[in-house]
Length: 451
Image (cartoon, rainbow, N blue to C red; front, side, top):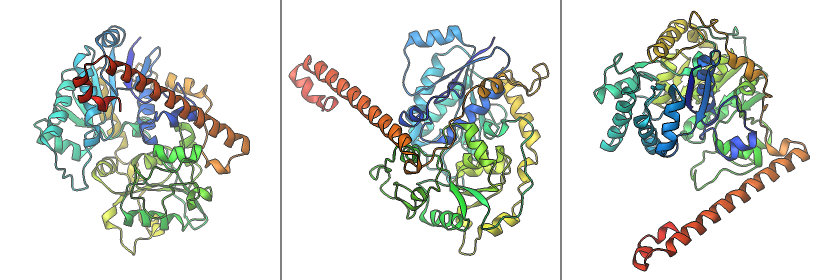
């Protein structure tokens, strides 16, 4: 019975409440982070397989690590654009854990945050941190799986060798259904067609304007946000923090009376099944989000990406997802024309070969999966277990809900804030008590700890 530790905000089979997912940020800022653990778990879950999700956001003590070494056979590490400045501390936590584990540690998908040209000014500390992580993983696995060509070039720059130290596998979420992808024949679309739109708060004003103006050409568009701040706005009506995001593009729905939110044109998701079920009902998905559009592809819906950076470009190119660079958008770019001339079948071309390469990567790292000859080919116990859970369904703006539901959401949010205040107060009291035991000169030097 293989037992696998997997880095994830939560297990899809745990199905936490919507409120907990949002308030505790179990999606790690982005709903797209639900997709690749979901896909990986489905593929690795053979009969009697046990997969436990853990969040590696701190250093672990020796006792905990010794227990994992004793009880588990693998540590699986799905990552997104983890090679970025804001993730270096997290990368150090993961590296420290990998070094102390004695079980195989396999990285399934990792990428670098860079521009569409692939260029990134990296500091010596950045390179050392990434290289330290790669070395630690290579000591516990056959090779790393990376997202695309831009990441491959960066690792070569650090001195690593493709097909020896790492290989390109794309995004594991694309392999949710193995060697085949759902596909609906694209139909003619017009102003009355239902469409799904995705973009985020931090894009250029020009790209933001284009996405908004394109969305408004459809009478039945739905904006599907992925950011944790957006989901909190929908669930509890909490405006997006202007200190966190001081520059918000015109028209972006950052508070309840913003146009998209006020009109009820915004819908979020906190579970994969509800997300895919919604995307099956639309004729077209477009925007800047890689996983928002991968989700559409997994629902069989035509998708098009307007690419703002390298992390998205390398995946779009590898999986042959229809796309256009954001910098290529002009005043003449028309969303209906884009749709008409896009080849939505391109993502099907080469998918079987890409999947075979991905499966081989898993096998070379010692991981069994449901597509191996003796595993019932494609039949996963995951499907049976997930079917027993009730999907959360779509997350609508708070003001559109019946009054009892609004009251429930607000009461839950108030209770959460109260519990956080108690925790913070308790922590501060603990620090003050500790400070009281220190000599005055020392206490003065470290007073920032309990201010």
